[in-house]
Structures are given as C-alpha cells and as structure tokens.
Image 1: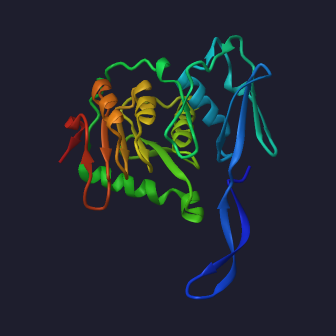
Image 2: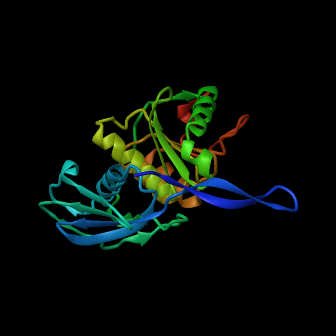
Length: 253
C-alpha cells in the first residue's frame, strides 16, 4: 500500500493563493487481532505493517505462546486489519498510552532490562556523517514533511530505515525488520528523528541495542533507563555538534 496520496491544495508565497498538487502522508487505523479476537488498535502509516506488528508484539511480549509472523494475515481497506494465528493467548493488561504524538502503546511492567555489555564504539565524525546519511534517506519525510524516521546501523551501513506518523511505530518497524531478517542487535545504533522518550530507550534496551542517537533530546526518564541498562544516548546531532547523555565510553574522538 502507498504511504502517501496526491491532493490539490492552495499555497501562498505572498498575498495570493495558487492551486498546486501536494503529497500527503497516509494515516490509517491498524486493528490487530489474535485468533480472530481484537487485541489493540493504533494509528500508523500503512507501510511495513508486518514489521510494525512483529516489532511491537515481540518487544512487549503481548502473545504468551508460539506464533508465526509468516502466517499473519493483513487486509488493507478503510482500516488495516491484521490477524495473528497463535497457540497462546494475548494480553494487553497494563497497557499505557505513550507520550508519542500518535498515541503509541507500551507495556512497561513487561520490559525486563538487563545491563548491556557491548564494546561497540564509533568516532564522533563517523556518527555525524552516518546521521547525515540517515536524514537524507528519509524520502517520505522529504515529500510530506510529517513523518518520523528510524534506522538500524552498525556505524557504516544502514540496514533498515522505516518511516511512520508515530515515532514509536518507526522504531518498532525497524526492530521487527531486524527480527524477520535475522539481523543481530549487538554492535548496532538505533537512529531516530524524534524525541527519545523512556519507551523508545526501553525498546532498544530490551533488545540489547547499545546506542540510540537522535537529532533531538531525551527525557529524564529515558536518561535514567539508559544509565541503568547501559545504553549510550546521543542527542542533538547537528552538523557541528552532538550531546552524549549516558555511557560516553562508546563515543571516541
């Protein structure tokens, strides 16, 4: 399914309006069922839906029991309908609407965070150059200006880039892609375009991703979680500067 639509709008560059064609990001409601029973719904960009569901459900341990992502059915219509055949039951007890602009969902009581002992390191100059390439690769943002981006990298190659109206969704899509493609999380950086909240840092810590980097800042709880779990948080990455908030041993000059 396309991630954007074309629409005639009116633009003003001075005191007059001119009719032009513009590209607008698509927003759809995603309804996810397990064995035919609806479990949750959220709003998203209807692209990389399988990756989004896999990333969210496996990170949050929503299904207690065996299930196969390849057997997941996806139906695109007014809503995007997903059904997951599973041997176990699904539970969303303790679900919390996150601080994301589109209202992501997380299950903080289920996140089991262990200290990450990953010797990954990257030079400041290399991280700035990597982040520049990451931003330039965000095609949907370039044409619509209203989505968040996330990516997974080893410091050189960007293995996956996902975009979504919700920043939590973009991160879940990247995690889901890595799981489906058997890409290990060790020695990786989660690149993000938006604010680093506690939910996003927790997702990365859950999978042992040693570094999270963004063009904006982390929250206080995100910093606390990163300190305890051993995640390096880097924010405000711009052309000539960046801030390292936790575990600076992975950043070398």
